[in-house]
Image (cartoon, rainbow, N blue to C red; front, top):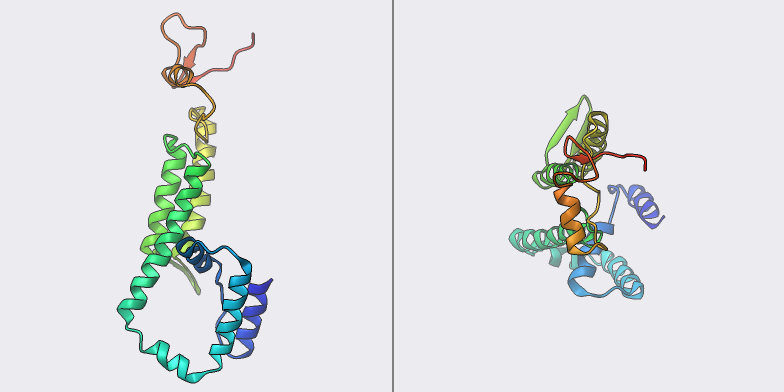
Length: 189
C-alpha cells in the first residue's frame, strides 16, 4: 500500500513510479538492522532532505563510479539473498527442471535481456521472472507427459545417508521395485 501511495504522490509531482522493497532487503542484509522504526526514521529524514536543494546538489557530486559500486553491491546482495532462500528450502538442483529454471532466469535477469513486442518492452527482472514461470511449468508438463519425473523438488533432508544412497541407486538385480526410464514405478502391494 505504501508503494502505491508513494507512486501516486510521485505522479502528482511529475515523477515516475517508485519501488523500494528490493533495495531495502539489500540494505537490511548489509547493515543487519531489521527494525521498522529505523526505516521510519530514515524515510522521514529522506523526505525532509528532499526539500533541501543543497542536499540534492551534494548528492549530485558523488562520482558515478561510487554510485555504480554501491549499486553493484546492493543488487548483488539481493541476488545472493535469493540463493540463500533456495539453500534454506533445500531446492534440489540435481533436478534438471530446477537447475534449468534457475540458470536461465538468472542470466536473463542479470544480463538485462530485452524483448520488445510492438509498444511493449520487457527487460531484466520482469523478463527473467516470466522465463522462470514458463520454463518451470513447461518443463514439468513435458516431464509429466513423458513419464520421466524422477527427482524430488527438494532434497530428502530427513533420510539417513544409507537410505538416500539406496533411493538414488535404485533397485539392484532382483530388487523389489521395477524401474522404467530411470524412475521407480508405482505398484500395488
